Length: 119
Image (tube, rainbow, N blue to C red; front, side, top):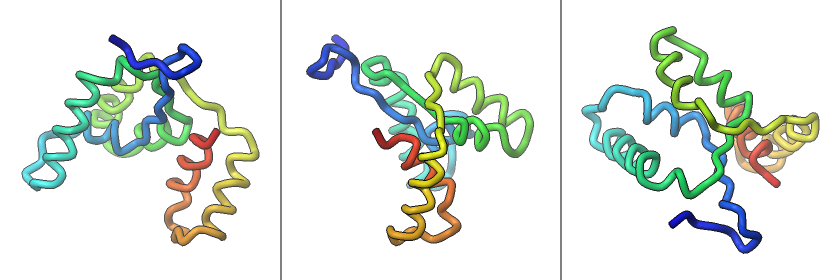
């Protein structure tokens, strides 16, 4: 049975790039990374159908970077997932997060992910 919110629609989930990375990468020998990969695969295979999934252009751009073959593997996992638009307010909110929240400036992409996923 699919999980539904009080409005009768499935809950929405923003899929950040690391989820796609765990799905597409080769099994790791590092115990923590391997556990994260396994948990991600389990959720993806057994639970994602309960949710409406979304990514942003930021995720698509990050998944497109690097080795072409690996990028194609990551991008295949994005097939059929909705895309959230990133209006100017997203960039403004991300800048505020960097300025006001203890996030390093190097976390700019993380702030963009937070801002685009915020209702």
